[in-house]
Length: 306
Image (cartoon, rainbow, N blue to C red):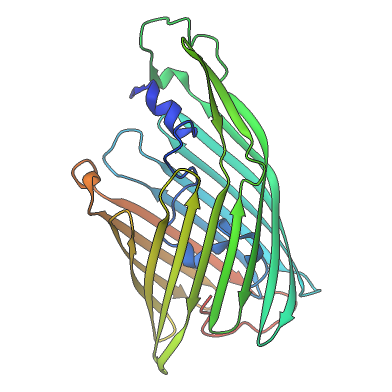
C-alpha cells in the first residue's frame, strides 16, 4: 500500500489556503449542475450524467473523482428538481457528498431566468494507514478522528435562451469547519471556503452542419488566484462536439463528445500540463456518459447546445 506524508493529508482537506477545494472538471460545459444548481431542469428532459476523472496520471495520491447528477423539470415546468452525488479521493483523504437540488424559473425577455439551491451533506474521511507519521507511534496523531460530516449549501442564478447562457453561483455557503488536527504547536483547522463561479457561452451557427460554441468559466476562492477556463467547441452534423480549452494554470484541454442515438451522450477530455507539473504526470483523463430522456411529452430542442 502506498504511503503519503502527513502534509498531503493536511493540504487536501483545505488547511492550505492557497488552493481550490472543489474538484476540477474539464467538461463543465456539458455538466453544469456540478457548478450551478440553477441549471436543474433546464434541459427540458430527465437528464442523467456520470463523470469519472483521473487527475495527474502517474503521480501517487493524485485526485480521482466520480460524480453522478440527475435533474428534470416537473409537470409545472417552472420547477426543477435534481440530485448531485460525488466522491473525490486525494491521497489518504476521501470526501463525498449527496446534494438535493431545487430550481425555479421565470420568463425574462427572450429567455428564462432560473434560481437554484442545493442543500445536503458532505462527508470527509482520512485513512491514517496511508499516512507516514513524522515519528513512529507519534502521540500527536494517534487516536485523532479522520471522519467528519457537515451540512453544505450552494446557490446559483442561470439565464438562458436557445443560443446563449450566463450564470453565477456560490458553493459552500456555510463555510463549515471540516475538522481539526492537534499538532505540537497547537490546533490546525480545516475550513471549507466559499467558492464563486461565473460562466457564459453562446452558440453561433455557421451553416446547417456546423455551429461554434465558445464559453468561459471563472472561478474564485479566497487567498487563491482567480482561475479562468476559455473553451471553444465545434458542433459537426448535430452529432459530434470537438473542442479545445485553455486554463490559466497553463493547462491545455482537448475534448470530444458524440451523441449516440437520440438520447445518449459520450464525452472524453484530456488535459496537457504546460507548467511545472508536466514532468511529474502524464496528464488528466475525464470520461462523461449522459442520457436525456423526454418527460411530460415535451419536445426536446435539436441540436441541444446547452
